[in-house]
Amino acid sequence: MVARLGLTLSCGLVGLLLAGVARADGPEPLSQSLDPQAIYGGTDVVTCGWPTAVTMEGACSATLVHPQVVIYAAHCGSQYQQVIMGETLNVPKRKLAVDFCKTYQGGQSGTDFAFCKLKEPVLDVPIVPILMGCETELLKPGQEVTIVGFGNADNGPYGTKREVVTTINGIQNDEASIGGNGKDSCQGDSGGPVYIQVSDGTWRVFGITSYGGTCGTGGFYSMMHKGMPWFESESGIDLTPCHNADGSWQPGFDCKGFPSAPGVGGGAWPEGCGGGPVGGFSATCGAPFDPAPDMTPPTVTITQPLDKQEFMGEGIQVPVTIIAQDVGWGMKEVRLTINGKEINGGTDNFPPYEFPLSFPNGGYCIGAIAVDLADNMATATPVCIGVNSPPPEPPEPQTTGDESSSSGAEASTGDDSDTPTTSASATSGDPMDDTTTDPSAGSGNPTSTLPSTGGADEDDSGCGCRSGHAPKDSLLALAGLGLLGLARRRR
Image (cartoon, rainbow, N blue to C red):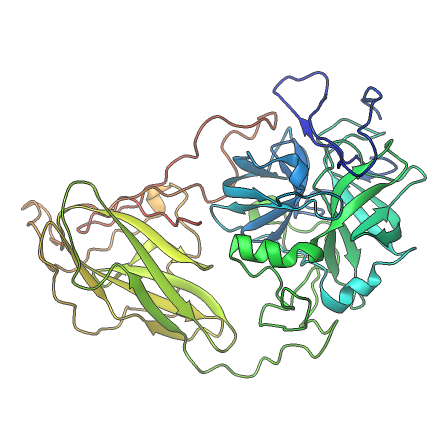
């Protein structure tokens, strides 16, 4: 495989430039020139093998541990715009837009922690969960593990995802010593994952490739569970479906379906590399989640803007914030409505549920539909606002149509041919042009920009360099209401 230090790539680069630094209290950085044939003892990953092993624009490796969170090493830095999925940098399968990245302040041996939060969740790739709680008892000398990364290799070029099976040498000072005897990570594997199989046959991820000496002699790895309180508090996302951040057993409805053969490959990238074998409800550290019938609907409230709030001025920005909670199996999604109509792309699958909008002059009633994992539904009390106009009165309670169907779990990818053009009923605001068959409230166009959904970029022939261009905007069209764009901002 490949070693610990990060590498910076540029298009057409013939050589490899060492960009990372070894931990201050670890071995000195490699001083010898890098051998282009210099993973070590590993093999190329098959198509769709280890799909959650990703690369940070070719500079470091990383792990998708949650649909919206990628974990990697602090010494790789935080200035990333994209995360690349696939088997090679030359032919990336997906380019995921990054919202923000954070590194653990003062991160050194055992705390080489960093993560990036994605702008949009990856909902179709099977996630290998983080090793937690009693499962960490497996981390002992002689335990077999698999290291995965995109770095230097002794059997091929940099930038190809490879795997190597080796063993743990020991655990000391909150970090793991792994590999040796020719089986190792190397430059460019920094931040990448180490996977381990647990008692029920499913897999977990625990390691963050950190540093080491000469490739092939073994290295040192920070462990994700040690940084879980920091990862969860800084990202604002629950990354442990079966545990609390402190490792105590707390299974939820999503403590199930973990891959039992993630390295074998299954399906194809357009379908998210799914279809491989998975386990049932996990019971590795206690009783499995009891899927007793959940008949209780969730609760949902619009907290921003305020009802009857009037906005004055030009180019009005109105951030919509929604709180939704469920005491049963948990939340599935929140769907936004404007003047009683669901908006294609206006679906958020993870908290915080936020929709920044730009409204033209007129009156609008904003609503929300919350759906839990048992498909129980609840609607929020509408919030009616005015933009350079008096707020309208809320509409009479009514059904939203066929509630068995979802209005789209992912935002529009920019193909307007797939966007519904349902008209909304009138409330207030300037009248539409006489040629419009169904004039709507608020005569103008609430607008915002949809970020890339994390699908495959049109330019899949790139070299894996950082891209200087911004993600393509996606547009939505709602005839009558005239909704041109809707974004889900994440902090």
